[in-house]
Length: 216
Ligand code: B12
Image 1 (cartoon, rainbow, N blue to C red):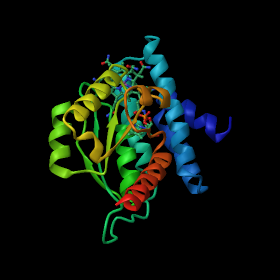
Image 2: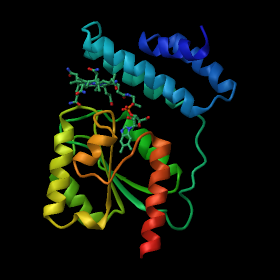
Image 3: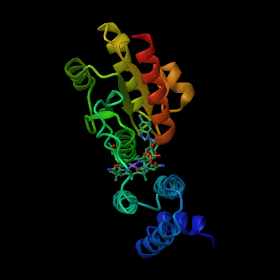
Image 4: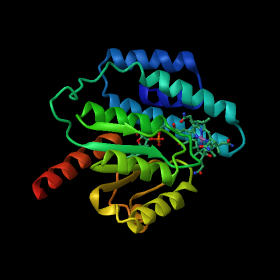
């Protein structure tokens, strides 16, 4: 079995020793962190499938989440750019009400901060009202709505609608992301963009900020 298969299988089967020995080898060989992350995520997807099939229980999801976080904490710290005088832009981010999955959101935040953005993280289970209060308080350039549970797509749409009705919608760009949504649905619910994977999302944010500065 190659390293990719070993890592995915160890994540899927929640084999801690195997997972960390494989991580050690990959890090020692200077493998790309985004590639490792993708493999870990694939393993997480398999965990999700086993949960759906009734073979895994909620306790297994908790173990999977803990192992994933521990695995990615082994990456050497990224060179942070946030010490520059001005951040590239201000981003407000939160996981929609009813959803407490935050591993993906945290990776997105970390990537953005490393890339030089100021990130205001509202955490998980964030209601429309909390988003509105925070938007009025912080005046972000970009608002990111996140979720993994399918039902939160409707909440994303309701939140975007409410922001439009309050005439707040034009002052920032809305990006949606997380496993609950895809590009097509993001357009259906009135978001400006679908964020995709963290690096792609950061590049998108840089492009948005360039355009905003250009239009000032
Ligand atoms: C770990 C896990 C948990 C952990 C979460 C721990 C934590 N602190 O986050 C715990 C145990 C808490 C949990 C609970 C539950 N879970 Co759960 N969970 C998972 C699991 C296995 C992995 C999720 C994960 O962290 N993946 C790794 C991260 C890195 O990947 P990611 O989230 O996709 O993020 C990446 C991208 O999507 C993107 N991204 C993420 N967010 C954003 C945001 C933006 C703006 C952008 C641009 C990009 C972006 O970047 C990330 C990095 O690449 C998934 C299975 C799966 N296929 O995802 C199920 C899954 C999400 N859970 C599920 C369910 C059903 C539940 C529970 C209802 C179970 C229960 N009966 O109680 C509860 C719900 C709790 C709630 N109300 O939210 C279902 C959801 C079904 C659905 N579609 O609605 C899934 C899909 C499992 C399944 N197949 O059935 N879960």
